[in-house]
Amino acid sequence: MSEEPQKYDVFQAIADPTRRKLLELLAEGQLSIASLSSHFTMSRTAVTKHLGILESAGLVSSQKAGREKLYRLEAKPLQTLKQWLEFYEQYWDDKLEKLKMIVEEDK
Image (cartoon, rainbow, N blue to C red; front, top):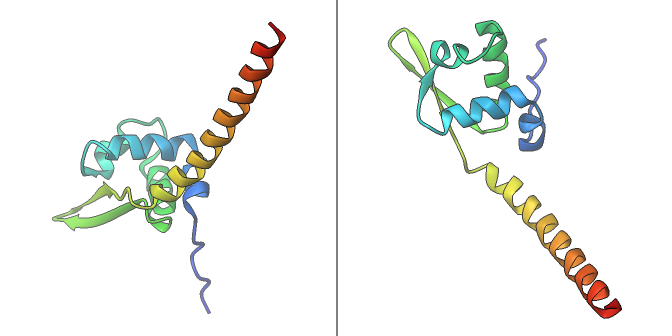
């Protein structure tokens, strides 16, 4: 009996700086594992594991092209992150506006 591979969400996937860098690289277009690995000091196997986590979160897809595998960014799941950040952006805008009003009242 084999275990199901762990499913990662967007927040877990982008928590690691290596994976964020991979997403940046893939934002420029499809890249092979060789091209991606050239940007890191780690092994191709390690880069492949990071890509697997990104793929599990739906942020990356891959396809075979001859003997190599090409990876591409799938940006749609980043919408969840964008919505979460927008909430906090509004929260901080409101707090800063209140602080500004308090400071201006004291003048």
